[in-house]
Length: 114
Image (cartoon, rainbow, N blue to C red; front, side):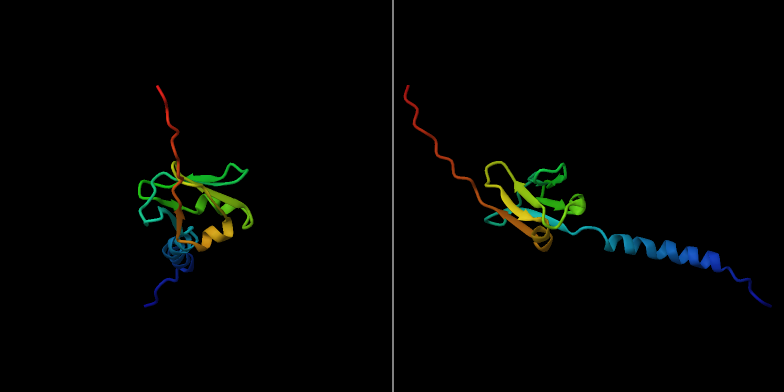
């Protein structure tokens, strides 16, 4: 008794099983925005200077680099959060970092006389 050969079915099944792992390997690695103490900075802004490309960190300070995939490696990325000094990095530098630390911005209030 011989079994029928289904080369197209086998190839399709193999593609369906392998395609998700290839797609996940191409996804951008996540980054994280923290303060000097290592605490997450929620909703920090991450954008390419002079271009409408960017993203926002989530509530735990994490962000995806996928929106920056169309930017050139030499483009400048600005990471900012209210109350902190903005940090500028190139796309290439940001891709090599797992965590970006922002420094608090010191404000002094002037005396008000009534």
